[in-house]
Length: 166
Image 1 (cartoon, rainbow, N blue to C red):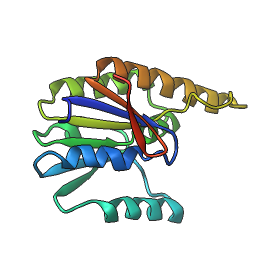
Image 2 (image 1 turned 180 degrees about the vertical axis):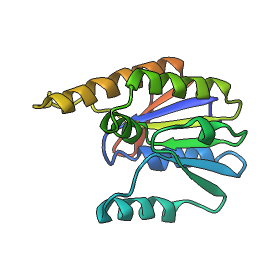
Image 3 (image 1 turned 90 degrees about the vertical axis):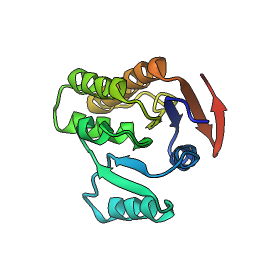
């Protein structure tokens, strides 16, 4: 059973997106896949297509690279993949991270259906050498902490294996 709000964390290629999709598809369809990636080059377009190709019928994709309000305003189960890309988009667009996070939290509070959020855990590596990368790492850590505190369930994926954190 999927909790009302589940946060799925993990490193790159840890299996977090695949696991999150399985959590959502355990619920009755239709499901909403909120995609935060922007396919700005061939490599990213290929990644997006691979994600779409593996999903079962019953998914509706909503692209939301910066603002989740409309995408989360549904009574269907929702998967947001991924908050780390969303944060990157916010940072590069020079939007106010705190304000954007507040909008996200308000949209999550209004939801009545299950929501699964995917995010990268970026704090396990070395300290980045440049200021922008350090700002991103710190913002991602703070965002993950805020959402983990709010979540009913937190999972951490390692090599495709989920570990329950909360």
